Image (cartoon, rainbow, N blue to C red; front, side, top):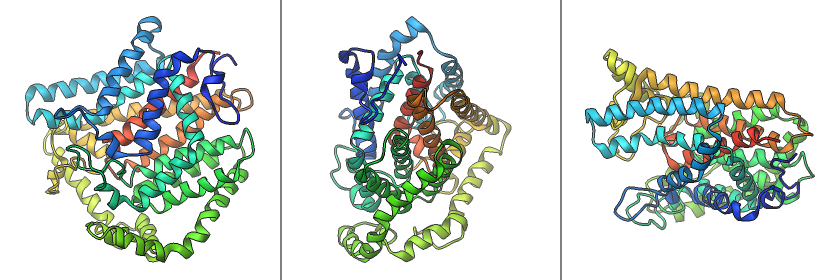
Length: 453
């Protein structure tokens, strides 16, 4: 095919793309920011900003990306997928402008909460004609440095409390290498599926099998119950509906998991002792100390909202929070339809008392709280269009003829499922560390699937 041809062994974009290397400089930079900034480092990297100005690296990336893709819009226009995304974004923009004009809340709070919406522009931009270049570079870096990223995700899972306060730069709340536990499982799921897709091209190396085990362990040991659930559902969906070699791929995951799980069982007590020394000044030290009992309690909590309080809280508390936000919005027709507006701290519904946590730990409840039923409908239309696009594309593809497009389709679907289920229990789609890589990857995968032969 004359479009994107990823290298079979290492997925090197530069050698097989029919474009001179000097035109890959910006895709290479963006891919490096996504892979080694947001995915490798995490929330601390996303919090880097211009000194004394609340403009973060994500906003800078958004502005430069808009300039980069402006030529595509002027020369080729927008594709059908982008048209719907643009209409949805414009509708959300009207709600945002209304909040700014009415001035019910502080402007800085309005802009901070509206990030949930304006991050959607990454999806629109990277679905453009040249977006497939970014997909090629992201996949190249993820496969080339898969072990480094796998180790970092496991480290984020095991040492989250320590990393939250380690190497804090500027005025940010978190350390440079801190990553919220809810973000690890979706990223681990994406990398697992990419490695499994590689098995369609060649035999996986032992190091790749080992890394699958690391990634699976980072999912299972995550403190995020929603993240674990999202990852397991996404991987199950992949094995049942997307994979052509279900038994083969499942066995690869099991082999990789055994390579890690068996020795980890013996080293669990030693790990707990090391954590206890490391987390001596952390308020989270109790429920982050790993033991077999803690892991069992965590999985019981997945199916029992009133289960063991291994994290100092049960799922029942979150359900009460969501009900409180819904009841607050249904107090009038206006708030039911248009919400409380961006800038309204949804934690006030239960007197949460923590200014840095403004959402209700559920992406859909957040949207309903800020933009009402209108916003929920727009949000649902957006993700329904995303699923419809990838599912329809998969039906048109033949793996042997279009392996690169199949890779884009399968990984995007699995990643999307993992993220959407996870964000039913956290605020990660309101955070740049999850939202920006997620929308950039989905958008560039759309571009990969629409690039002409």
